[in-house]
Image (cartoon, rainbow, N blue to C red):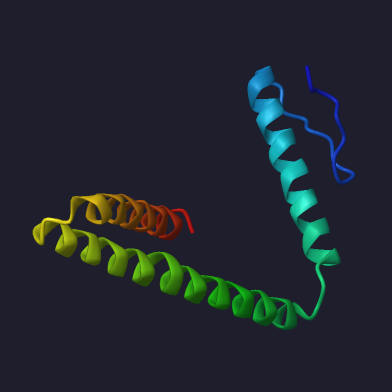
Length: 112
């Protein structure tokens, strides 16, 4: 199947290999060649790119913590307090909204 494919100016001269081993060896050589090519064209100033990405991720995370986490927790606690004080009209929707905010915060942190 892949016998006779030439890679890096060398030919495979093994006789007792089956087609799957030849294919996996060829694919491994192709993978190494592509990795070397990607490493050669990678930009030299990776530190500048990483710093800007880290800053935007940090700001995004702070906003998520403040808005989803803290605001959701406050709404949830106020809703439970109002349910205890027998104000069901306002308490139940606040508990629902607070729990939605907390679930969104948990999923945001889990899939980060």
